[in-house]
Length: 209
Ligand SMILES: Nc1ncnc2c1ncn2[C@@H]1O[C@H](COP(=O)(O)OP(=O)(O)OP(=O)(O)O)[C@@H](O)[C@H]1O
Image (cartoon, rainbow, N blue to C red):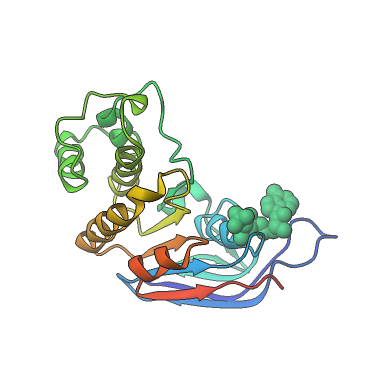
């Protein structure tokens, strides 16, 4: 779905200086945007605002044809239906791969879990626990878990930060292939220009105001 942000304003607390002011962003349906920017420029904050985890921002945010925020509206994070993949993947250690993937879905849907396992090439690993997986496999479980409930948009914060750099090149291609095959509108926050170039259709460089 398309993401449209107009005139966004945000600061952490009344006395803090604004991280966003008059900020506009449009991401076309199905496209992959990389957000680059130095540490502290507000990359993670922007993902938190889009997903509804920060409720103090002002401005207008639309996802698809649904306004999730404007002066009269604030849709809570649970109801916003964004897929968020955190830096450390935040997998549940006591749940298996299949149970992790099923976690965010309403009701039991083994067919959808199987579909996600196959999309992310986790076949045969369904009964393993996160600590029995490689970093790249854990990332794919996080991806499968986020995609399973069919989110409106996928938000990834530093997808490669906890992985061995030698593996990252292959994993980038893998990640791009999976995202492309779903047609999901995706925003990837990274500090690495090579990630941005390899993964994204467009790049935005954030500059803290
Ligand atoms: N909960 C918070 N309360 C107050 N200030 C915060 C909070 N979280 C982040 N900040 C500040 O907001 C600014 C933007 O932080 P953010 O984490 O969005 O940056 P970033 O670009 O993602 O940085 P990095 O690349 O280091 O992860 C920073 O100056 C940070 O110190």
